[in-house]
Image (cartoon, rainbow, N blue to C red; front, side):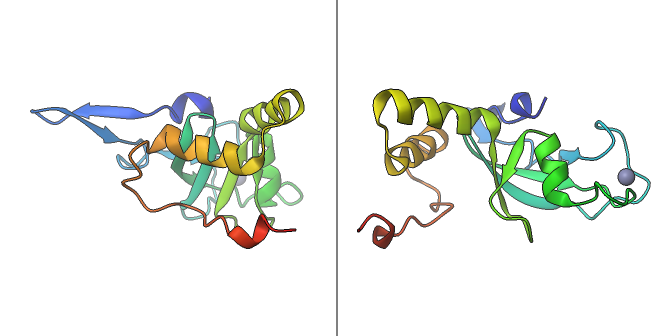
Length: 142
Ligand SMILES: [Zn+2]
């Protein structure tokens, strides 16, 4: 379901199609109850989601009412999102993107740097927006 939501949205503004997102119109993804409303939800938090379609901002509302599965990273994993960290999650990667990178890496020897910039080009081919994650050149040196 989330993958459908991540597709680029273009809205007609009267003169031309303008790039928009479901985040911009206030869509909130609710976790923990198969998409239904939680009785004790967390305040919505913006998470940058990297997908094969590009980088997207998604408002996520975590479930706070269950004891063991309230771990936020577990809720994201149930939604097929792999968080970049287990605390204060700001970035997540779709399983589809990770599987695609694994195949490209194994079959085509694609490096993460090239794949990362391909994903960025998918969402912003003219580089009009700020790069969401700084990829340090020091990471490339051995
Ligand atoms: Zn709940």
